[in-house]
Image (cartoon, rainbow, N blue to C red):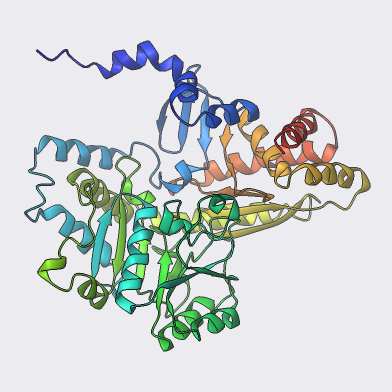
Length: 461
């Protein structure tokens, strides 16, 4: 007889071991890093845009699980959909039938991209990118995919080949024969296309690393250039899609841009069930799946599973019913404008940029001699330490979770749940202002922590 499994009891008995368990059995550097920067919190529960610790203190989430929690945590509509699909006891993943939920989710997704025709469902953003790379190569008969400098498209081998950050690529060669071009540089794109072996260009309409946008008109001009050379435009909307930038897809901010393949994931999950999707044109899919012999030439064991499909359908319903995309646009404009107004007030604050609720706050070299000396000390040890100095007090003093936008970058990225409003914007701006005041005072615990970071950076060399 099977012994009863009690999840609640297991967590009550062993939950306090969480950091030790990770250190022993998982990535041992994660708890080490969290302890070092003071992020080793114990969160007891979460709802919407907030966490709570055991003492009942609330924490504002401006990270959204790297964008996964587009609707916040535990949205009731998504929760109900998952309960419903489990209770339905569907004959899921038989592999030799056609269940209705994948077709229904594909149909709903495609209404937001009327120029696209078909969908492949996988399990993650990097898998959506892998699918796009394979489909582009097969459909064009060409081996090379171009990507933009500083891009991030995932960490599996194919997506790593189009990753613009050397820190992720180092030690994993050989990778696929792909080539970086500067974001926004049409001449560089044209030079590579003339070689005749390019299957396509994959691009984030807003780069997550640094929150960088291409120049106005670049995506449309790149699309036209690619098509003249019979190559494809691949839009990686894994983070920027599903309303993040104030449009359903970020590429829709530029008129006439109609990518041949679009990758989505993250927010489509509702924060519950891993999912990735690659949307594409009919002729591409028909070339890949050209005969019954090739029916399984590209597939995923857990792709199109009922729980993921139910979560995705619930997410799209909530987005429509609750005006999520418009809220992201309005709240994003409010937050960005209030932060941008601080640039002239603080010499360490260089720029505020982004679209919708994807905002980058960049810091730069100050003018005053006293602050410049401290800035130079940090930069000499490791670029990005000042941004980390800002992130830590935001959490420790103001209970707001944020992230540095990438390694060796002095940029904080805000990607909160798309459900946040004026109250959350006010709380963040008030806290950020307090942290900037402390940074510009030239003393206090913030700069003491900066010296600790310098010592740690030097020790790790």
